[in-house]
Amino acid sequence: MNTQRTLFKGGTILTLDAKLPNLAVGDVLVQDGRIAAVGPALQADDAQVIDAAGHIVMPGLVDAHHHMWLGVMRRMMPNVDDLFAYIDVVAEQLGAHYRPLDMYLSTKLTAAASLDAGITTIIDACHGSRSPEHTDAALDALETTGIRALHMVGAAMDKKASAAHLPGDLQRLAHGWNNAGSLVRVGLFGQLDLDWWKVARGLDMRILTEFIGDLAKLGPQFAKPGVLGTHNIFNHCTRVPQETWKLLADAGVNITINPRSDALFGFDDETFAYQQAVDHGLAPALGIDLDTAFGSDMFGEMHALFGQQRSAMRYRRFRGEADAPAPIRVEDVLKAATVNGARAAGLDGQIGTLTPGKQADIIMVRTSGIAVFPVTNAVGTIVQAVERADVDTVMVAGRLRKRNGQLLGIDLGRLNADVTASRDYLIEASGYRADLFGAAA
Image (cartoon, rainbow, N blue to C red):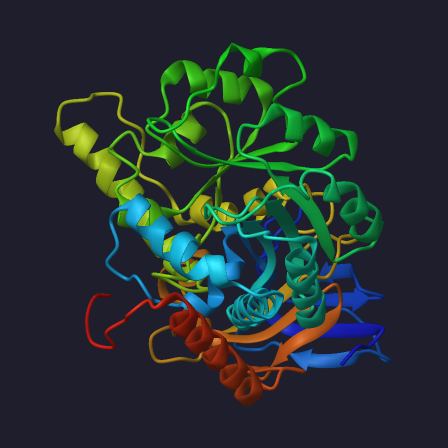
């Protein structure tokens, strides 16, 4: 469904714009894919009206780090706590057998599930770009589902894969996808390869690096002017030395964290990467990271961030640290899931707030559920009470992708069958054995 004018009427409006007030009861008018107005009792006689009474209307969520190509491996390793055991399964065993079809189906599944959960933008951290054909399959899946995405092309992790097409393929991809108005854009998952970074910077691409402090180091070459900057996205950033935090902060890089995944693998400690970023003047964003243990649910990440930050900071306070950081507030959590994610993707001028002129990436969340009503604090309701099933309506760039609780334009039965067949093929081709009721053998 694609209409030129849509009016969200009579909802509780969370703008996330510091200069634009929230409204207990208000409207949002969308015209030609953009937010035209936000206010009480807007008049738009020729608009399609969506009754927002009993709902919260707000910007779409931004998943700032997700390996979408793992979609068919959902919950395959729910208890994993060894990074290298995880890499052995997803890369050396299963990933080595990925066809472009498996890439397409995994990415489509993750994109569709994300839209269903109110995620309108995703940074797709693809460390499985085995060939140009695999990359094209992932990009086609993103475009087909209609999600807004920054697809980060990176070398596949398994020993059988070749990265000979990288970074040379970036020019083709930049010319084909990084155009004005494109919902899907391309960047580089470049780790710490400065030769690759140079190619990406020449194409004005953003660069993603997975960064765990005791597994990777930033040498003096990264302190040279112009190497680090706002074009960089550093994910995890756990157990990072203070001198490295200063370097990242001085350069103004983007930080993304994955609360559930970082806890799963034991990456973080009580210094807490989110808090380190904040203490250094940065605005960290939230990502989901894995389908092998979790899924497309930013509400789960918000719950985890709130609980983990408070646990870590109060531990530091009770341990005797007098100047331990203050407990996190729900407002900060919601910004991490919207505004900060938009900035990480380089899209803060286009999305992340309900600001007139920005792209109409909007979600409408039901508040009539037994676990939700009555709404006394709107932000607290979104961060602490709402679940993905409460997401009623999702709009990306003015186009409805979910309405009345149902995804539009996606045959779930067909997708289920195709994804299951893809998973079964990968298990058979790899010889991997999984126990339906326990750990993999």
